Length: 415
Image (cartoon, rainbow, N blue to C red; front, side, top):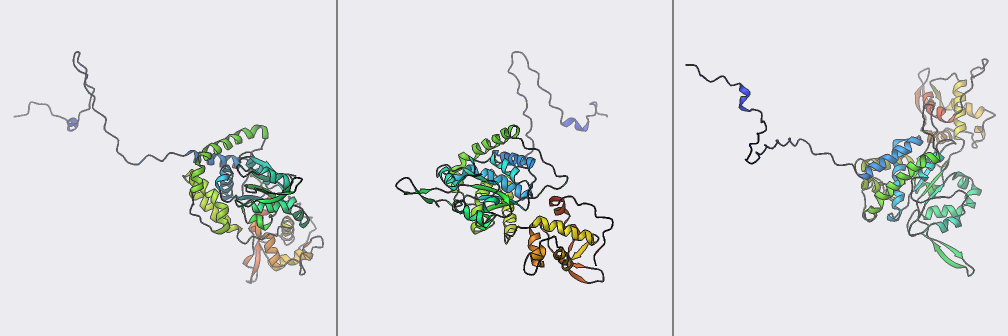
């Protein structure tokens, strides 16, 4: 006999939970609680103010300056932040902003740094005595020196500014005062020297300063690389706001920073120099601890074994381009042939570069800062020899050499 009840659909066992209607004079019915969502993944950790302000500072630097690498951009960002905790550090790293020629962005980078560091003290035309009296042990300023090559670039200038170099060397480490006799009674007075410092100039600074520095090797902008124009009245308020945020974030962490001993990827003086930057990164958290240590390793490895020779670097690029053009722009050129042509030019300084003229070793040193070196190449006839590929020079020619004039129609290729 058929069931008199109608067929119930298969989904009727779990009917929708409709709100219960309230009945006058009775307590309000309770609404069933919604089921908790499944705990699939934990919420992401909140981004700290340190991460935010470092990212914003990095963005502003990149807006006004074409940096040579992402590592260099990270290093400058962390160095600027570290100036706001100078009194927490055992060592005061220098920032050496150098380049092989003019118009590499050194002064522009120093402009941005000046508006974001703690208590900037511009030392253009300042005497060492004035600088000594401007540094206090309790709250040292951040020294900023543009056109440092005019102070140390020649033997005579270096001798004249030996006091300034001594201050920069001694001030890298805490408790290294300088003694000066002052007053009518010639009383010896100890002046503190500890302060962070940024120096910009053409060519390498003295070895003793470079060894205590985070070195930023700037390069000229290539065609197509653009940056925003820097205008003091318009752009400094935003940079000052970043400076104030850095100070507000870091000052409460002074005691914490003093007690930190981070694991460093380098040793000895390099570790002393980079430790404040790594501590700032650790305080910020997020991606910054890894970024700081990767940057430290890469940049200190690059600086290892760097030569001080910085002369004639732009001229060598121009003359090498001329030789390639005279040879018919081959894909590769033997080192011997290149040096022969360079030394044979009576208008060039290469024949008198040394007792033997320009040598393969001398050529390697001149090209090292551009990342160009010779290698084994196969030449017509199946022979192998040391030489240079033309495409090795293309980036450097675009950045540092004037536009090449068309060769005369009667030009011939030399033997």
